[in-house]
Length: 261
Image 1 (tube, rainbow, N blue to C red):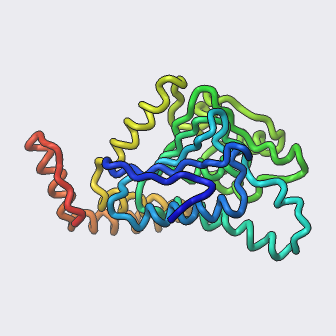
Image 2: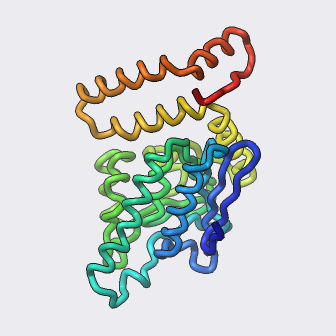
């Protein structure tokens, strides 16, 4: 599929890179951009050659400025706006249920709705110069669509502070409060992203899918239900050839040869 708002590429390592590519609009998340993100992630999910997805940006300083404010203020009927914003819901669910690890390479500022997309990814590596925030309240909007992801990743008081004050924080502060996994200097950023992406892509795709699905589904279960569900998933994992191959490779001190069975 040809994309106009992003770039899509799959490397021989099994790493698919989705790069937001609307630099003139600071990668604002227009309806078209969200539709293409949905299509790109669907394409990655359905491609057996893809073992890991990296989400990043072609802009030097901005990952994404968030939702397209022009569309927010349009004269479109309310029902049209309601169905349009459903794209965020579908995208968050798609990334969470991707069945493959996702890594957000935050090479620039991650603001407003784009913070939700970054948090939907499994891991986030941030360039030291990046900033994070939910400035919507400053223009009379509120981060409704990403609130659930914010509260599931950040402590309640800090999450509330971000949303109510609308202030931006540094990458180091984002790491401290749990938004970011790792912060690296600009000259080390690409190598750090590549290292993690290759490592993720080298794991058993079958066990990675089972583990990812389990992580996503147990998230909001009561503890007793989660334990029973995870117990069953472990039993299923024991039935796979990949778990046997992984253990055998460990004892034989060699790299495992995954079959996906």
